[in-house]
Amino acid sequence: MFDGVQKSLTGRKRLLAFAEGGGSDNWQPYYDFRGGYTSPDGSGNGGKPPKNNSGTVIVIVVCVAVFLLLAGLAVIGILGLGLGGLPSLTGSDVQSGVQSATSQADGIPSGVHSYSGDDLDISISDVASSTAEQTGVVVANKVCPSIVGVLNYESDRTGGYTLLGTGSGIILSEDGFIVTNYHVIEGADMVAVTLYSESGMSESDSYIADVVGGDSTTDIALLKINVSGLIPAEFADSDQILVGETVYAVGNPGGLELSASITQGLISGINRNLGTMGFIQTDVAINPGNSGGALVNVYGQVIGITSEKIISVSDISAEGLGLAIPSNLAVDIVQMLLEYGYVPGRISLGITVTAYTDAYAEAIGLPDGCRLFVESVEPGSNAAGAGLESGVFITQVNGQPVASVDQLRSERDKCLPGDSISLTVYSPGAGQYYTVTFIAEEDRG
Image 1 (cartoon, rainbow, N blue to C red):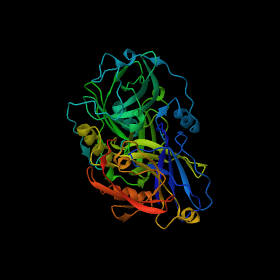
Image 2 (tube, rainbow, N blue to C red):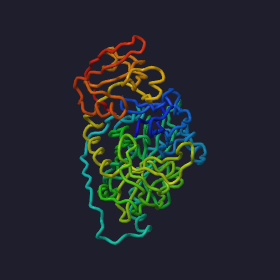
Image 3 (cartoon, rainbow, N blue to C red):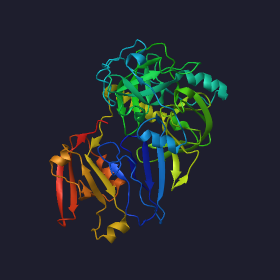
Image 4 (cartoon, helix red, strand yellow):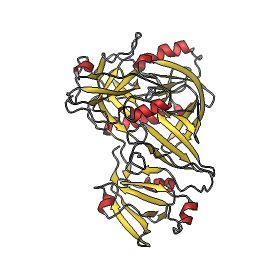
């Protein structure tokens, strides 16, 4: 059963934990009910749990963008990918004469709805089963022109920009809409896009992008560049895919030097529920830089967006465990990002919790049902204003018992922004229960 997700503060690494049986370890992963994920110790190191002797399986998953500084170096080191240093650039070095709708001086913070304008109509085709399967050469020729490089910059002390890392993106429309992973642009002061060329992608020939919107939960972001005449990718219905199908991943592994690379593999599994969505599992080679790229079928149709790969299971190195976001979900999220800049209707509780195992809770004498420990409460949130504090256990949400992260998430998702939420909590210090009631806030990514 899935119990939660961890993600480092820099957004480059996730730690997924699956509990089988009633393990004796007291550690369970933290879940940030503010909408994103956080490491439990605040250090960004992923908060690795103690080794387990009773069946808990720890799965290490990394987002596969190439991040070259801070925690990105640790991820690249894990994957054995070494890259050289990158130059500091001014805004003029990357704009190729195209101005962003947001000024360069202010930057383009990710997740901000900075674009308003054209409509976007993405059609999802049936899988082209009536058409003969295409060779890898034909697929590459069809898909590669629709793949872009996505560049994540931070501002520096000189007033210019330093390249933090790169990922991939997929062209959605001939007038410049592009989909990528949210973690590729997360924290950027400026985002730029470089287009496909048979001679390779070049950072010096890039276009500043507007961040139309982003969603950390599904790891989808929508960008817009002021360019016309682009070649949009064809999207297929991901509900029609089958385990065992041949697929190709097209993206920029290792950065722009290996741009528009294509690798081949199979669909290993579908609807792999790893906490936030049902992923497509594939054994196709996915490496840092592939994030936001295309997973396509033998007809050159996009069926998923490559996002992450599992690199370790219970401290044992893993290979061939790539994950992609289904195309149907990606298109749905893109349409909401275009209209709102975020995914509406979700609520934020403003808290971070961790789940205790039954064995540990019993060992320290907690009452029945006290399993969800509140690690932190977001300052300024409605929960904080209502008096909720860290160090207590949530036992009920609107009268319904909750003893796991899954149950808490399920009850949370029954509510809409503006609804009243009542949390029954137990204070171990006072040895008593009390109720905290507040208005649910909308989670805007």
